[in-house]
Image 1 (cartoon, rainbow, N blue to C red):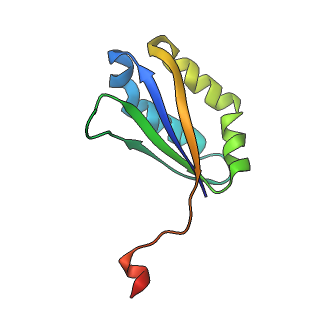
Image 2: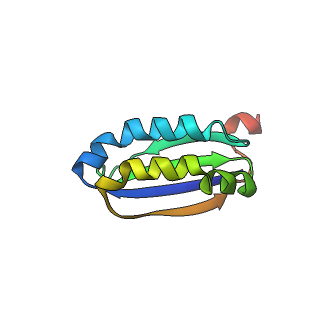
Length: 103
């Protein structure tokens, strides 16, 4: 699985719109092959920052989403509120570990 941690840099109005916008992104991304999930993330030490985690089964499937016209249109919707270009880091996620797996 590939996971992207994405931070957007928005004005106050953009930050207010962010939770709803994440749902719209999730709806659009969920129609792409390999979509796993999207989660809004809140930095405990700086809750005004706007992050989300986006997961796909493979890097190629995420690239399909990133290169899509749908994503480009969604980025345009928030453009009036953007202070600077978003930043993303991509991670290959290993198997999940929990105490339930140990028992």
